[in-house]
Amino acid sequence: MNHLLIAPVLVPALLGSLMILWMRHDLLQQRVFGIIGSVLTLAVALKLSHLSAGGEIFVYRLGNWSAPFGIVLMLDRLSAMMLLLTSVLAVVVQLYAIGSGWDRKGWHFHSLWLFQLMGLNGAFLTGDAFNLFVFFEVLLIASYGLMIHGGGPMRLRAGVQYIAYNLAGSTLFLAALGTLYAVTGTLNMADMAERVAAMPVEDTALLRAGAVLLLIVFAIKAALVPLHFWLPATYANAPGPVAALFAIMSKVGVYAIIRFFTLVFPQDSVAETLATDLILPAALITLALGQIGVLGTRSLTRLAAYAAIASIGTLMISLARFDAQGLTAGLYYLIHSTLATAALFLVVDMIAARRGGDIWLRLRPAILNTGLVSAMFFLTAIAVAGLPPLSGFLGKLLILEATADDPWMIGIWSTIIVTSLIAIVGFSRAGSILFWKSHEMDPEPGNDTDEGDTPERGPIPTKLETDEPIQDVGDSAAPWLSFVSVGILLAGLAALTLFAGPMTDYLKNTADQLTTPQIYYDSVLRQQEGSR
Image (tube, rainbow, N blue to C red; front, side):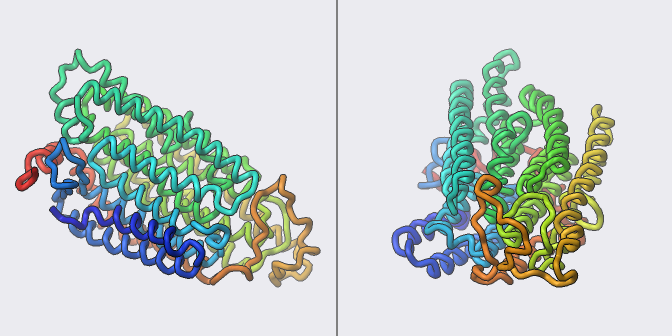
């Protein structure tokens, strides 16, 4: 066994616990050890990605107990990719939180950050369905604290709603696992997959019910229509860096759908056919609703939240096919949408901070650093809307190509193209209000006004209008870190475009591995020499 497999779970768990016990009142130490924890996790993720690149599936048996009786962690190309994406995002957004001063607004920001990282990594590595539930709960508990970080009635109300919805989803998750256990007698994913494959078709009614329950749970986590209702208020009211990290958290639901409906319910099974019939129309509606929200909203933070919903819809259109070509296109767009959505939330947070906490799309005088901030908003808007030359355009082309022979092809292509135009109009409208027309109100055109010059900037929003604390740019620990963080995410999108060929080759091999479940059976259940 390679003990490195458990490090992405242990490192943030240990450092997060030590932070609470020894550093709870020392912000500098929390920042140092928080960054150390995230960077160590990134280093481990890089090593694990290198190990998995050869196509081998690595299994870690806790206590050296043999599967399916013991708990196993499982590393393949998909889980390694998700670990690396999570670790990169965690480091970058944590730097933004330090640079913007968001981590000053509560004592336990960095410990909660590490616990959420622990839950995310565990969810991507586990080979056991019940432990997937456990890691879901770990990351959700941490996200509850991060969601209400900084306080305020609007954020607290959104946090309570978020908790209520996820508790309902967790209850449903347990019901789904109980149903599957009653049918198969196991919760180890590889063992469950073998038993499902050997089950007579006439005895699969209860199995299909459990599969649909699981699909509903994962659709809640991924925010697919009509189970998306929790996301706009949650993401819009969360602190900027927290919302940016949530860009990967919604992908946990997507990851779980991919894992279960390629491994446990493989291609051509009754359960997967049922999943495809449900996911595709839901994905099309999710995409349309999200982009209409981008066009119609009057709030900057909700604009980013609806863009996140639209990206989930676009992603699931391709993944709903559960074939190698659709998975390749979907995984490419998953990487793109995670980076682009996170960058958008960070840029929106920068704009709101420089407008005195005003998140509404209305005319205000030009903001501090307006040239650089507007350029970043322009680039993130291009990426999220799917315009060339950034990777969103290539991602949508791959999805269009993957669905060219789909019976729903006309509806899929029309929805993607029309909603892309709607997104362009929505972002153009927002950008013109924020940066173009705002200069007409500047008392000294061409000069940025100072954040403290409130008389010329109009009335400060009331608590009814926004729950954001008034954040002066000068209060930031290191404002340049905010720009560097967004720049890294934009550079990642550029790299994803420049290296699209090698990346799609890697993702194609990942999709081929996912659609060959036999190698999972052999790695987890057969090759157990030396285990108890």
